[in-house]
Each structure stands twice: as C-alpha cells, then as structure tokens.
Image 1 (cartoon, rainbow, N blue to C red):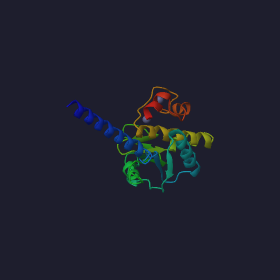
Image 2: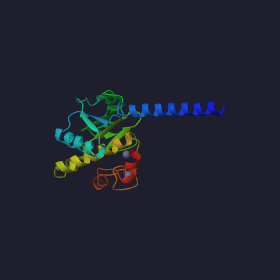
Image 3: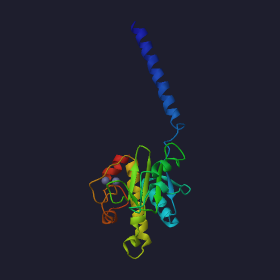
Length: 207
Ligand code: ZN
Ligand code: ZN
C-alpha cells in the first residue's frame, strides 16, 4: 500500500515534471502579447505635420505601433447649423469601421469644432467599449483665439489630447495630478500645463 502510494507519488512527480517541461518548452513558441496598435484616422483634412508629430509622440508615450488610416469624411448629418459645430458621437461608429485588427485602438483626428449635448465644445471624447476616440484640433490652434500661429504649441496640444483620450481607451479615468496627462482639461491652460506623459500612479495602472 505504502509502496503503491509512493509509486503513485513518483508518477505524479514525473507527470508534473513533464507538464512543467512542456510549459517551459512552450514558452518561446507561445505568441508574445501583441503590441498595442493605434490606427490614426484623419476625419476631413488635417495637416500632415500634426499627424506626424502625434504619431511619433504616441509611439514614445504609449509604446504603441501607430499606423495612419485613409482619410474619413466628416459626417455631414452631425453638423448643427445653429451652433456651427459638429456633434461628436456620430463620428465614433465610422471610426470603428477603420479598425484593422480586433485589438486596435482607433483615434479620429478632425479639424472641425466638436460638441456633445450640454457642453459648449469638447476637445475630444473616448468610447472605451468601442475602443474608439476622437479629438478636434479646432480649439488647439492659437490662431483660433486670434493669436500668432505657433506650430509647436499646436502640435504639442494635439499630442496631449490624443494621449489623454487613448488613456481613457486603456481604462484610465481622470487623475487629480495637474501635471499628469489624465488631468481633466477644462481650458487650454490646463492642457498647456500638463505633460504629454502619465504620472507614476497612472503608468502603474496601465500595466
Ligand atoms: Zn478625459
Ligand atoms: Zn495620473
């Protein structure tokens, strides 16, 4: 009985060794987790220099692969004549169609001014369930406020809005740290103050 048990134990041990060898042996062959991919879709004409700056910044800040999709049309039905703005939500289903693989995040970038009901305007919005986000460049351009055009300021603001909305798609909420990219921007001075990167707490949450 005792012997039978020990033989059985030995058998279990051998089996475990075999299983662990299989697991260890399988590791190099197992598919590495796919790197995050962002499909950036211009909705209507968007300056190429801004898209390039954003693409490079997103690669750096998110460690993501960034590909640029073909330009999508701005949905005419989303235009609110009285406000001279476009409602933001109708862009999202169109962006979802631009996904190239199931895990992709899609980021729409448009030059038109966006709003959602009950807000005067939005810099951007994100739908984490659909893994789609949209940002508007309209109010990021110093020229919008009658200021001297400043491409660097414009591009940095665009990158910050993009990282912020993609942070939402990756599950982050707003952060109380005013230097963190996930801080809620009520006005442009909030955007200009924060960096394009995540604070250590948000970065931990991303992993
Ligand atoms: Zn936000
Ligand atoms: Zn944070």
